[in-house]
Image 1 (cartoon, rainbow, N blue to C red):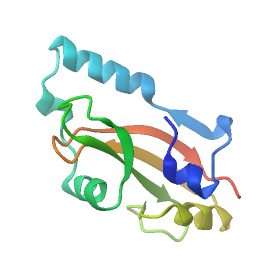
Image 2 (cartoon, helix red, strand yellow):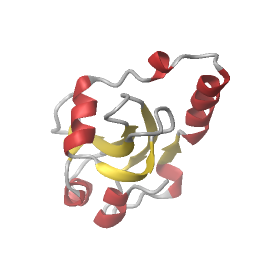
Image 3 (cartoon, one colour):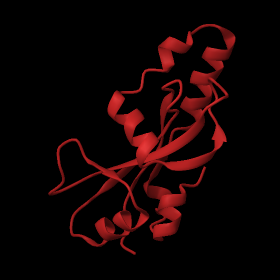
Image 4 (spheres, rainbow, N blue to C red):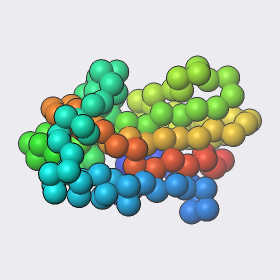
Length: 131
């Protein structure tokens, strides 16, 4: 799943620097659909993540896999030198490109979140590459 914010910024990561969590996501959803886990076990997004998904997240263009009624949002957080310990929530694609040009190693974490049912899952992480 490509991130529209990263694509728009031209900061697509090198394949070797990307960790993709789609298999973990598929396993979690399988456990949920099979009844091994309840929705309450996986719909536990922190209120700040839900707020970020609602206010600054990019539309994922697909429905929530849990409640099937909400639209997923993609939220990106960047961690690195001279950033807050809790990272920086990215609200515009240009921010990723700007951070990629700075000295130091910056890592971006992309999370999908449903503002309706609070489903959330880490989709991928990658090291920002200079533009």
